[in-house]
Image (cartoon, rainbow, N blue to C red):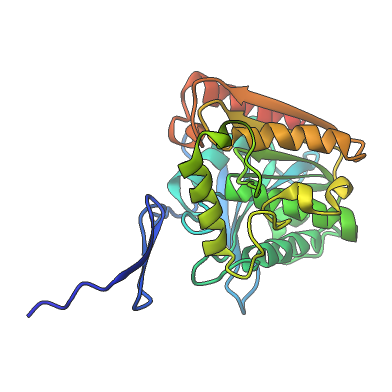
Length: 315
């Protein structure tokens, strides 16, 4: 006799299903690829363990032109998307995107593999990301455990970036840099690609897209069940009293016209300019495109243009 189908507790289409017996079924972002030397760009990658106890790790990338006799390169610390639930730093879409970005921008990249909900609810992903940043900073004097960081990185030119939930992490890590002012590196700028932010009060097209807004709010409480709700400063940056202390001098916000999160990107720019922060923030909007289009259509003209804009931002 066949076993009874377990009772479904929560269902987020294209993301994850959670069953009453504790079973978790991820509906995407489960494929991984190994590190490599990319045959097209020549970018090399390898994996490194950051914290043995928690298992937090990362994938490191260096462009083809690096060698110990060349000048050191900017460093990009990247946080992948996936709603804090799916995808990893080792997913094909991220591996391919960062190979292209490391080559185009001629930067060293550390793509952080933080722990995900629902096995590890927020704020664990934020904690893991900060541990990774501090591990990277420990290489600034040239004596860290990872030779690529010792040899190739200019720690006076560090950038954070991420998409969707990863952009949320990049923002929150930049706030922490501004508040705590850690030693060992200078955060020059951050790029937020289709950032996952929300808020209790709907803005722009969120007023019409009631279902989409409700889904983002519900997902937030799923990944952070101890949260106070959609105005939690982790997910609504304007509720953070330290918003104006963002620890960098420039920000690039990327939005897509058909992405329901685009309103939050534009609002981020407006609020940051009014906050007294004092840096420069720009928005790049891609017309007729949806959420994370650049990952799934990397060779289209707009994705190529975005790649070049991201590279220019770091140089």
